[in-house]
Length: 183
Image 1 (cartoon, rainbow, N blue to C red):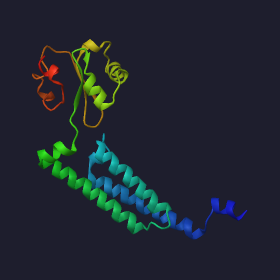
Image 2: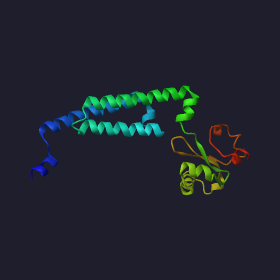
Image 3: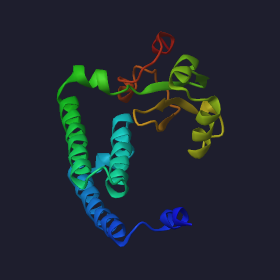
Image 4: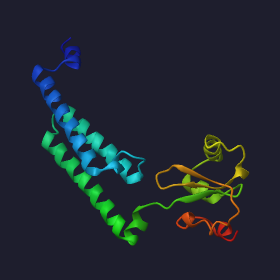
């Protein structure tokens, strides 16, 4: 009987501790999001996503785990947020670091043809590409010049226009196989 009571209620002190930690971490998360900027909550790249998940886990640990102090969790959150800020700062200033850390957008279709090698590498199916085309109001794969998977995982559809892949200046950084670049 004692065990079932402990499942529902530890003590008033423990409830008080959880309540205080919850309010504290709520305010801390607001502060971290505000300082980190819009990147932390917008469409995230892999690193932003990982940091958000880790911060969420640390908040939960700081609130609920008795052997993780509020200070422990706060220091870990501050370090992660600082490392995320530093990484973003350095990536914006170093093309070498940017190429190591940031994924490149990749071409998924080219003038009505799937770019199978990129689709496999990105682990995206034809049905996902077709769904994005339908969402944008297209009724056929031929109506789009290109579909690109962006660095945040979103799909961009570029409507059909009379131009080559290399003439489309905004596609200069998009990974494409040689056969696409030649057309």
